[in-house]
Length: 166
Image (cartoon, rainbow, N blue to C red; front, side, top):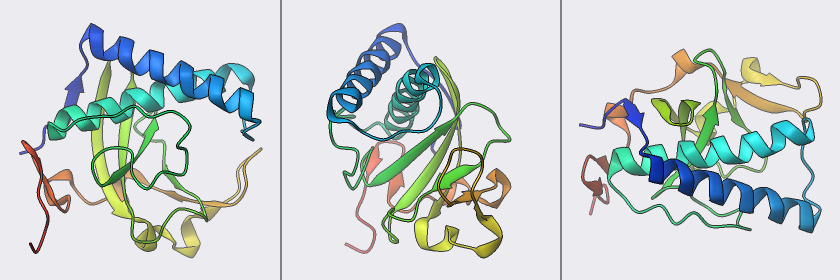
């Protein structure tokens, strides 16, 4: 069974902070367009990496912590991760997110996270979830209570990933 609450070790927090800072630096040097204040951009990258580490730890899979791969197909295993701070925050899907991708919502701040649930990008494109909050382009904002439970995450086991249907 996949644990819902994940506590990162000090070393895992350091890893997330380092990779998050490297990702922010890469974004600055390549002119990546971002929303929010410069301060929140740094925090978003670091906490986002924390969410990725948390999911990798929960699934017992390797996290590569890549830098410069914003459009890579996956963050952890075969999943995309979206990390938010508050339990009421919604999972964001953007128009260029691949329709077949599975997105996992991770909630929290370093070092403690909760794995909230998952959804396929295609299923998230509901008209009632389309929104364009301040400083953002239109995107789909999926309420946490609309997500499927982690126990039903396709291809996931506690000790790694398995190929469904193989």
